[in-house]
Image 1 (cartoon, rainbow, N blue to C red):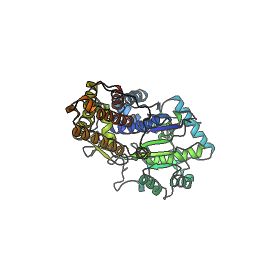
Image 2 (image 1 turned 120 degrees about the vertical axis):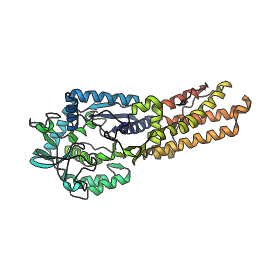
Image 3 (image 1 turned 90 degrees about the vertical axis):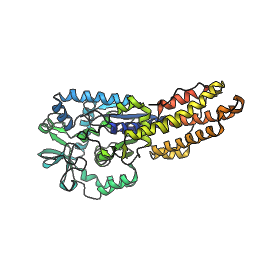
Image 4 (image 1 turned 60 degrees about the vertical axis):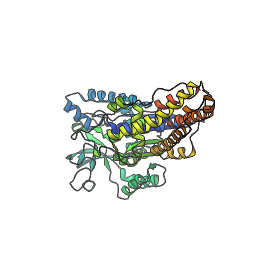
Length: 465
C-alpha cells in the first residue's frame, strides 16, 4: 500500500521579501519530500504565509499600504522563490484565506468547549518580533528578548483570552519523552524537556481589536478580540489540507520557534481532541560571513541573485552540503565560489563530460536501469536528516570515479579497450544521478538522461563562472 507522508515548512511572516534563511528550510523540506516520492509514498508538502501578525500590520503602515495589499504582494515573492528553488510544494496556505479563518475559529471553539479558554485582565511584556509575551525571568540580562536583542518590548495591559497550557504539562512531557512526538535532534528534545520541568504558565491567545488594528481572525462570538497569531498561524498546517492528510508526519522548523511547535501546538490539539503531528525537525540559523543577517548591517542575502548567477542546484548544494542540518552554519560568496568550482564544475561536471564525450565517440549504448535503490546507510542518514553526510558519501564515489578515470586514461585507449571501463563508469554515474535526485533534481535529470540509451556528450553541468 502507498503510504501517506505529509511534510511542512514553517509558515514565514510576509512582512518582508524572503531571504536565504527561508531558502534553506524550503530546500530541506523539498529534499525530504522528493526522497519519500522516490520511496513510493504519497507526499503532500505545505508552507504558506503567516499574514495575521502585528509585524505585518506595522510593516504595511511603514510602507504606506493597506495591510491586505501588502501581504498579498509579499506572498507572491515567496511563491516566486519556491518556484525558482525548484521545490515541489503542493500547498501555499495564506493566513488570510477564508478556509483558514473558518478552520481556526473551529479550533478555538473545540478548545473552548473543553473548558480550556477563559478571559482575564492581563499585563505583560510583548515582543512583536516573536509575536509572544515573555515573563521577566525569560528575558536576557538586559531585560530583552534573546531572539531580538536591542529591540524594546511593548508593555501591554488589556483583557485577553487565555489558554490553560498548564493543564497539559504532564501529557506533553510523556509525549515528548516517549518520542510519540519525536523531536530531532536529541539535544533539541532535551531542551524542550528541560523547559517542561518548570511549571507551565497559561498563555494569552487573543489580542484586542485596538492592538491588532482590526487585523486577523475574529474571536468567535466576541467582536472586540482577534485570535492570537500563533494560535492561528500554527493551524495553517491543518487548514491547508483535508482530514485524510492530517496529521503532519514531519514539521521542519528553525530553532527560534521550537516552543510554539512542541509545546503550544500539541497542547492546542490535545485540547481540541485532534491528531498530533508525529515529528518535528529543528534546524539552526544561517549567518553571513560570520555575522547574523540584519537589515541594519546590510548583509541580507537574496537567494534569487545567487540562482541567477550560479544556478539553482549550486545554491541547493551549498545549503545542503555546507550547512549542518541541526546547527548554525555560515554563508559566504567566497566559499560558494570554491564549492562551485571544485565540487560541482571540476569533480561532478568534468567527470560526466569526460565519460559521455568518449562514449558518444564510440557510439556506446547503455540499457536503462529501472531498479535503482538507496543503500541502507543512505536510508538511515535520511531518517536522521543528515543531508550533508549523504552528499559527502556521494562525492566520495565521484572522487573515486575521477581517480579511476585518470588512472585508466580511456582517451589513450582504443574504443574496444575502453568499452568495459566506460560501460561500468556510466552505470556508476547513473547511480550517482539517482541518489542526487532529491538534492539536485535539475542536475540529476540531465545525468540520467545523458547516461542511458544511446549516449550523447553532455553539456557542461556547471559552466565556468
